[in-house]
Length: 216
Image 1 (tube, rainbow, N blue to C red):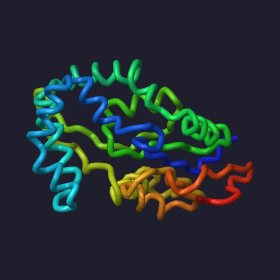
Image 2: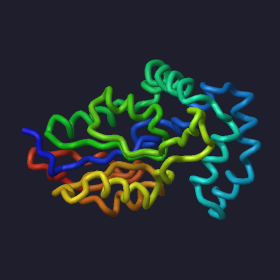
Image 3: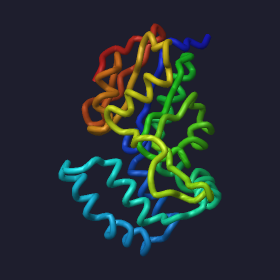
């Protein structure tokens, strides 16, 4: 029987995937020369973000603006569909997909919480049974072209918790599991009852009473 009072929140890049999916998607979409040019044009912001001098979301928006240009949403949607079909599955860790399915089999709600764009995460997540996707949303102008910015703040760090709390509203979960791999998942892990961060121990076994036999 489904128990909607238990939620499992999963980061994507580095947690479910083996690498940064956004870089792979952009490179496939624009080609290597344009990808490299975009990185060079955005390098002042990318370096600033690496040095913690500017916001990560600002740097990411500058990179996407330089690499993608004003591509139509229809074109990006088509590229995302191809990526989900023949690129993204190869990046997914089988053991993490198995964990998603284990939570679902126990009746828990599963939600993807990622800084990567919903452009391709939403259709992929729907195909494997996620209940919701909370992620970075690209902004498009009145002509349906990429505006070089985000419709909502970059879904990273504290923003992940804000998105989760807005999603469940007045009905917070009785138990929250969180799975991550980096600093961007710190606040979500702290908000959770049971958290696992890649590199800090093995995945905790799940029990029928929804209590893990030890939390890493």
